Structure formats: structure tokens, C-alpha cells
Amino acid sequence: MSVAPPEAIANWQDMRFGMFVHWGPVSLKGTEIGWSRGREVPIEEYDALYKQFNPVNFDAAEWARVAKAAGMKYLVLTTKHHDGFCLWDSAATEYDIMSTPFGRDVVKELSEACRKEGIAFGTYYSSCDWYHPAFPLGSPGGRMEKPNPDLEAYGAYLQQQTTELVTKYGPLLTIWFDVPQSYGADLGIPMATNLRDMQPGILFNNRIYAEPGRTKKFSQQRAVGDYDTPEQRIGAYQDDRPWETCMTICRQWAWKPDDKMKSLQECIRTLVTCAGGNGNLLFNVGPMPDGRIEMRQVERLKEMGKWLEKHGESIYGTRGGPIKPGPGFVTTRKGNTMYLHVLPEAPDPIELPALPCKIVNAEIIGGEEVTIQTRNDSWLVSLPDAARQPIDTVVRITLDRPVMDLVAIEAPKEFGPATASHVFREDHGRYGPGKAFDGNPSTRWAVDAGTRECWLQAQLAKPAPIRGIEIDETPEYAGRVVKFSLKVKSGTQWVTVAEGEKLGKFRAEFDPVKATAIRLEISSAMDGPNISEVRVLRVSKLR
Image (spheres, one colour):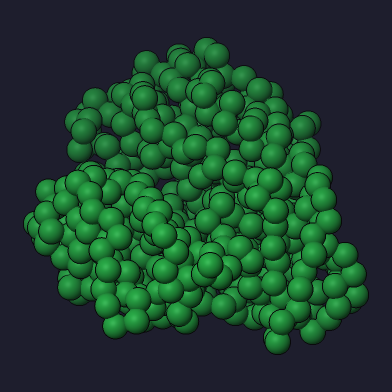
């Protein structure tokens, strides 16, 4: 299968920030799109929701304006999710928006509105269909086998619908496929090839078709399509293949009443760390059943837009690096400029590996000049406390040569080996102790359900004076830890620096001590603890 032209991929990477929209009749129930069919909502009731779906306050122009105000450069709409309902006027089915009381082509209106606002438009399309009788698997959760499957007939249906999307609403930025399950390469490759023949510059993600032997799984394939799609987590640094994190602004993809929303700090941090890892962010909203995007979500997105008005030069058109993400910072680059994003937990000074070029100038965007000292093979960046921003302090560093052609180098490691008493199902790759010390809040150390006592420990990469430790329980599992102690190893002695009965987002500060290791001992938990991140608060030297 061919890939998109390099200029099309580069243009998409330059955008860096897009809006994902999950919406449909399921918003009437406030449950998850597709997944709640046959689970929280009986199948017959779920499939009849379209008869009540009348989003009279849907305003495509307003959605496009919200995306633009947020600083988003593209928008991807769920035209068909796993539940089979279509948001456009499809000749292939009557299970679509035209059969609702609303009776208006949402895809047509939104694609036109986006183009008027200068927002590139793309479509999400589920490769599986738990509603369609010819697709082999059905609800709940794509686990039920249907009595009379016909993949060839379903493949023709999928081909007809995706052709409609390209010819009626294109040119499209991307078709974002999802959960192929039984839809394999024998159907997926000819389908994608046909679409690319119609629009050579269209992008496809890595979920077009199922891998052999994984036809009931929800597989993503690194080698397929034009970009990878880490979901609900920030991707690791990667410059050999484009990637895009898809993540929700709240917790559920579709609208849910009173769903917990991310703070502005979490939102900006997500965007910044995606860019620093050389990836895009596709940030999801779930509109309400009346067609409006929830006002609190709109306000949060506009806050992100305000931040980007000032700092957007460090995001748009950049690539990650030339230094890979490190403890409390990431870098982005373009031309002769490296942008250093200093996060709140960053040590002072920040130690960067020196690049093979000279510093011409360094200044905080919108602020004062910054002095960078050279020591051995390192650059030491120190910011006055008054200049530090609560979310991200962006330092613009002008260099004497282009930095785009530099090979990205590793940042100094804050922690050495990590160990733990327990690991969830012994899966050290996904849930091992090192995941709590990797600087990525979307990964975690986890233990088996029912674990009441456990410990987590890590060596510092090198002995360092520290004045505190921060620990984040994974938000979805916060509150499980009910009694713990925190210890620091100094020399040969372990010293208890904090004890508590509630972890959550915990911060302990103490008299500075030169540490070689830290240890969290959990003596009582309601269930298996999950820790997203552990950070040390450093001082430049002991007094």
C-alpha cells in the first residue's frame, strides 16, 4: 500500500493540534459511543435512539469557530463509529442522520464550515460495524459472533461509504480508521489504494485493517498507514515515523454529564509534551445531545488558544528535539531555533547536553534574557523564580546553525534502575516500576487487584541534593492508597521523610539531603495501587 506524499505528511505535522469530535444519538444517554451498546444500554434501545435525535442547536460554524479559537488547525469528526450510525446522507444505508428528526447532513455542514474558517477537515470511520448484519462481530464490545456474516459484502459497503466521504466532502485531510477486527488486509489494502487513487494527498492512520491472527482484537499496526495513534497517552519520542496522540478533554469520548475535565495545566502540558516528542495532539470533545459543545469545554479550549497566541511559535511548524524529553522539560525546533519548554517540576538549573553549535541568544518568550552556562559537555539553564510560569516557561534559544538536521540526543536521566515488590500480571513492559519514573504521566506502575501492601523504589542516576518528592497516583485509581511512608537513601542510611494516609497528588518537602535513591512503602491499600509519576525536587547545592 502506498504512503502519502512527504509534503502532505509534513503539512499535517506542521499543524500539530487538532480537534477530535465523538458525537451521535448516544449523546441522549450520556454513555460511551459504541461501547455502551448492549452494555449500559440494551441493543434495541440503543439502535432506536436515532428516532429521538434532534440536535436543534447544532451550529457547524460555531464548532469551527471554537476549534479556531483553541488554536486547532484541523478537525476530525466521527462520521461512523462502531455502532454503525452515520452522520452523513449515505446512499448505502438508511441508518443515518437523514432518518432522524433533525434530517440535516452534519458532515456536509461541518466540512464546509471548517473550510470557511481555514480548518482542515478529516473523517473518523470505524472499520468494524457492530450494527451491520454482514460484519462478523457485534455488541457488546465486538465480542458477539453474528449468525450470517459476509465480509465480502461488508467490504463492499465500507468501500462505498468511504468513497462517498472522499467524493462528497473532500478533499479530506485524513480518514482516521479504527478497530478493524475481522476486516483484514485482503479488503483493507484495495480499499485504501482506491481512496488514494481518488485523492493522492489523503492521510491514513495505522488502524486500517487487522493484522493476521488478530481479527478479534483492536489492533494498531506500526507499519500500516502514514502515522501511529497512541490513545489516551502521550507517545514516546519518535522521529522515524509520524504519530498523533488522541486524547479526551474529559474522561469519556462521547458526552457524559458532569464528566471530569482536565485542568488547563494538564491540557497545555499534553500539547507541549506531544510536540516535544515529535507528535501531534488530536484533542477530543463530545458535544451534547442538543448539538452544542459544552460551555466549560469551550472555555477550556479558548484558554488553550490564548496560551498559543503567545507561545504558538514553539508548537506550530516545529519538530521535536533536538534534545529528547527530559526531567521537567521538552524541546521543539525549527530553523536556527530551539525552544526549551520548562515545566513546573523542572530542576534549577536544568542540565542539557551541549549541542554542536553556539548559542547566539536566549530569552523567555515575552520576557527577559536568559544566561546559559557551559560546563564540561553540558548547558546549564537557570531561570529566576519570578520568571517561572505555572504551566510552561518557554525559552527561545537562537543558535548559529540550523538545528533541524541534528540527530536528536538523549537528555540526562534523572533516575536509574527502578524496582518494585509487585507488577500487574508481571507485565514489566507496560506496567513495570520504571513507568513511574519515566517523566510521562500517561504511563504507570500498576500492581494486581487485591494487593494491599507493596513498595516501589528507584536509584537516582547520580547522587544529587533534593528538597522534596512529588508522587501522582493514577487519576482513575486515586484513593486506593490509605497508608504509606516515603524514604530517601543518603549514604548507606534510609531516612523516612514523609508519612501519610492519602496519596493522590502528594508533595513532601524537607530539609535538603544528598540522595542516592528514594522508596515508597505502601502499608495499606484498598486495592492494587497505581502510580503515574514520581518526581524529585532538586536544589543546586547543599548549604
